[in-house]
Length: 566
Image (cartoon, rainbow, N blue to C red; front, top):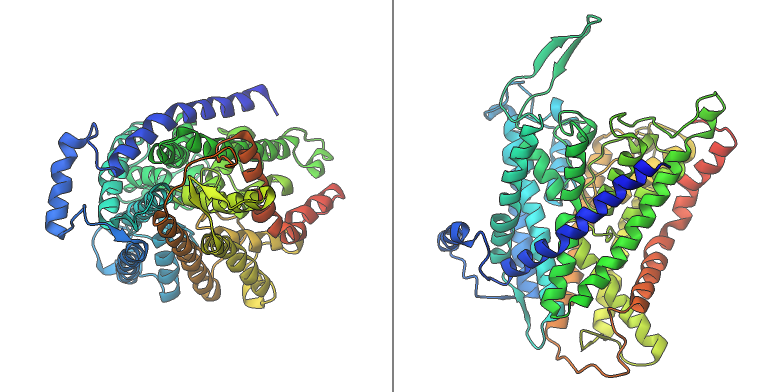
């Protein structure tokens, strides 16, 4: 590890902290229906959308009605993208003449982009037309992120309100997410990315001949517009297969820093928004502190492993960090920082090949997802995922002190605890069971690029990634009909079977009355609470996966020390 490497991380975190409060205030004003700096321009547009779509933004919904609206919107989006991908060769903006996707391929891609996963069993530059990239994938990048942000706001309202059974209006929250948050930032940052050299055009691919006579196709297309929402919306799906390791998607150190900031921006700001809604900013900073500790620990672990390098390579007389699968313009520090951030969130974008990381270096992105991607997390998903852990922590604290647990003055009872546990069980259920089944099926194991512990890591990483709607690939797994169908189902379950108990939990809390804080109240903003919350996250979130991780990255690390190769 180097001073330069740590300095990159320090500068990044300082910029994130500086961005959290102003953006958090802005989000609170947007979703409270207050006037913002963009209101003079966007308020008339917002009003027009409500009139055309017959939306009454003041008419709030119960938790069940909110979920019904979300599911109806999602179902339409799933069908739209599936049909588009099955008919893309008949549609415009297809200069490469790409064929329609197969039924299972279209199903997987549709489920992937609907759920904000953006898992890709295909190479974008050789599969998707420009029309599919824009009207299908980029459109879902916006609306899936908007839906996640809307759900987070609904959960915040439910937790912070008292004696009210409504959690907001889904259609209004979705409209404001898109109009006031995602679109303005995407337009501005998209132009910055174009200025940095990322393509934004409808040209055919450029054929060039290298100095050694080899022909190569340079990818063109509307790339910058997809890149910005891919990162800001914590989607992660790349226009090209190499994702953010490609110079076309991520040309230099400045764009690398900008993309990393976009991944954490809204998720970090939502902790401040939560404090504003709770009328106690200490509540939000407690969540921010918890997430920050986990983020810093994850980066330190992965950076240490990658900086130490591979002892097998060292025996060949080549010292230094592990640079296999990394872009030399980023190196070990910027690669591990990017990988840690993208797996802390549900982004899944990569600027290096995780399959080439050392076993312990690759274990960190895996554990980041196994925690529930609550380390700032995806746009919206990280905040409501963390609140689920807060409810569970408050319950455990109540047992420790021998009194009824309370969150913001509202009693946490059996119903709330059951809903929190149901949400937390989604990840292990839909990650570990499909992994165990698939690792025994030749139809699945035949698609692995490696055998032994590393091959198991590839399978475990894949199902962890799709369950958590992350989308980053460890690498080494090729798609086929079985994996396309199964991972598509798992993505939908991972997304919506977590949202359901989270929103119903919020609705249950919204209907409760708040009692005054007393000397016996266990505060949910103290350092003791942060420490207890960290303990619950690690014990409940991470230790569930220790046996599986031991069979993969941990065994592989021990074998690497013995000189074993795969």
